[in-house]
Amino acid sequence: MRTRFKQIIAGLCIAVMAFSLTACSSTGSENSEVSSNTQQTTLAKNEYSVPSLKLAAGGDRGAPNPFLQKSGGPADQKVRLIFDSLLNEGEKEMEPWLAKEWSVNGNTYTFILNENALWHDGEKVTADDVVFTINYYKEHNPMPQLIVSGDYSGLSATAKDEYTVDITVSQNDATVLEFIGSLYILPEHIWKDVSDPKTFTDPEAFIGCGMYKY
Image (tube, rainbow, N blue to C red; front, side, top):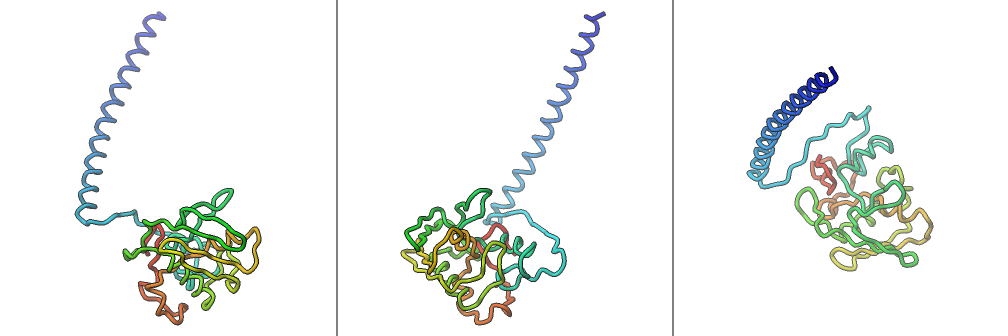
């Protein structure tokens, strides 16, 4: 009886395995065809492609750039998808982002940018963009971010070369790296002629270097 029972169980296992192998083979073939078609479409466009992302606004949160968003909350998280910062807030400490490495010497913070970073219009992200952003924020205060105080008066920035920038603070403390590292960087070639960022709503106002285009 036990032998017969074992034979029945063994037969069922073999049947399930055969069905699973057939299903996997069929699914793999379909996935390969989809993947191939996707690659051909992407190559035909001659550009990279990312999925579309639609997020519920949760009420009027303004427009997703550093000057048109509503203060804090979900609005700030949406701007973060479009505009990158030098560093990213990790679970325990700040992590490399636009800046691949950094160092501190007294009141001066030196950031070395990722040479492959591009604005959404194809222009390179450079140290000049960081210097411009610091100076622009001192003249035109953006909406406060979740982890940024909004006081830019004590900051000064200098480009040492195309991808290296020094940012000096008048007073140093444990929050400075988070403050500087979290600033949304602006493309100088777009914003240098914008005198009033609160009324600048052209499509170029939403060109960043983040993961998603607006």
